[in-house]
Image (cartoon, rainbow, N blue to C red; front, side, top):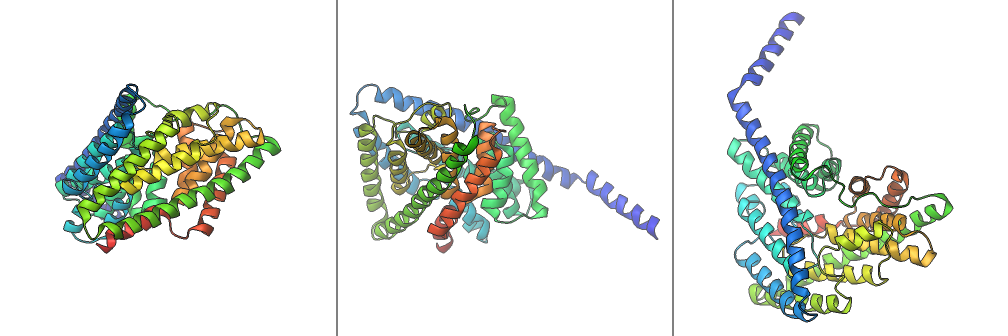
Length: 430
């Protein structure tokens, strides 16, 4: 009986392995992951180019953002609402909502190739006009949209799994952080571990990651920070950056949730006209803030964040100014993420703490980034994994983990609702 059962088991596996339908599904799924990798790299390169385009335009005079930024915000918000509805904001909230809704029509209103195209184009437009946004969050929605479309093409009837796999591949391609992509899918997107989905997620991350590495090399997003967290002084920074960064991140998250909710009510009476009015006001405020701060609040903030991690000082007002600029971009309704700006705010906060306590800037910037980011997303494992991978820092693993845990703990006390899941509720009510 045992021998017969084993033979039957091997026969079934052999038939599955040789199944034409199964191999078609595999090839389509792998093809989707390849496309995510290609799009992720292309999106990153285009984002760098559009940021440089804004800097070039800004070089003609301090007054350029007064014209360019409000006009860009209004144009982006108008196109997002009329041509690419569903592309507004980061995109992570739409992806989370798409995992919960039922029916292809409702899911298609949140994730589609059309929305993915709009997301990329309008995020680039936002960066070209100086918005404080990033392309990493949008890559999650783009990746999920591509994988969901691939699943439909290949007849893979597991939309939730496909969305998770596409989201993870998007994060992996955006940051060159494969482990963080997997953790992000489990901790933030699904909020649980499902053994049936693990193979899909892992495969998508590997394929998309290999494509990205083949095109741009195995790079570290921020490079390795100069300096280490050592001694009593270092652990003092862990406590201060964890508690302070988590509190600041929670305040940002709460302000964003409340602000987006109020704006949603305000624009309901006249959606297009009032949404464009909000976009213009946010664009003008962003331009004025950027001019007043010497231009440091425009764009992703990547350059200043990297400089802080290399030990360079940042202006004391960078963190609060960048936080406000990121809120303005989020309130405006234009497509664009908060990952990169949030990391920049965190490094600015850490650099400020280093100045106050007279410590080395680089370790404080690393810890500040960790505490703040954990406070914003309320996903501590994702926070410390993604930051350790982005910086290739193998020396400060335990301090970074402790900082993420402290930031998360404080954020939970201030705001019981996480940012992306709170924003996703609006799409689930529609």
